[in-house]
Image 1 (cartoon, helix red, strand yellow):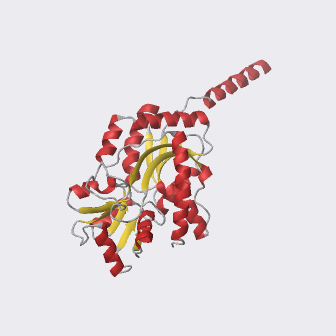
Image 2 (cartoon, helix red, strand yellow):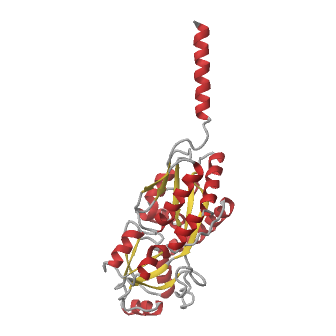
Image 3 (spheres, one colour):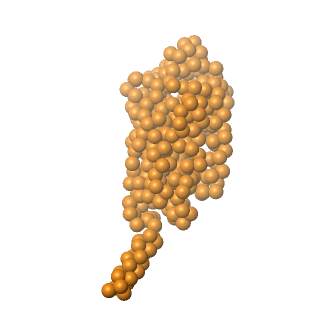
Length: 321
């Protein structure tokens, strides 16, 4: 009797060990997108998730968790079990929000050491978009009108200190103008409000507006990058227009900090495969965002530099309620 009990215990332990060592991934993975559908993060996440699913052999399921400029979704992902079954597709607001929380005197939604960078997929300068019938034909027109009418021109964003708020404040600081900020839950709702005439302008990734520009509904006055944009080659940079304003709305993959190295490396390989996937390049490129992949070591350095630079920008912005 004792021998049968011992044998059963040994078999149970062996079974438990086999289960614990099951190859990753052995079940579907949730990719948290911290913005509503329709924005830049969603545009990148959906083809990337599909390609990663093929490489990993398990579904990568999108979960949109919008709000607080991306902070709610990023906070959720940072607190997820570090087993590789919750991953995060974040935008550049990642580099901003902890500093903003400190300025506002509130508990941080996440910390920089609670999420681990895996790979960057895109890095687009944001563009200044207005309705096609708006009176401004150039950035200079826009700025001069704002100087004549302080606070009269408003713009929409994905939330306070988010990737649509910060670049507009960089421009306002540089040009010496005052604009009125109208926060939404994401780029999609903000662009809908712009199309509907509820707001005057947005700063967002080219992918969010390029089809509306081609359709004659929106006009892009300038962009926060250097040189020419692939999606909108005739649009000048703000620097070309005389304003020292620069900003990139990047997208990248993160995992909770405690994810084991073998799991992180498997996700890194899947991210690299997705970035090199011809369908991903086609879909994201058609939306106006060329893939600009950075592997883990380079992306880690990129994030560190971006955090340092954006923290200074946020300090200049100060408290925004």
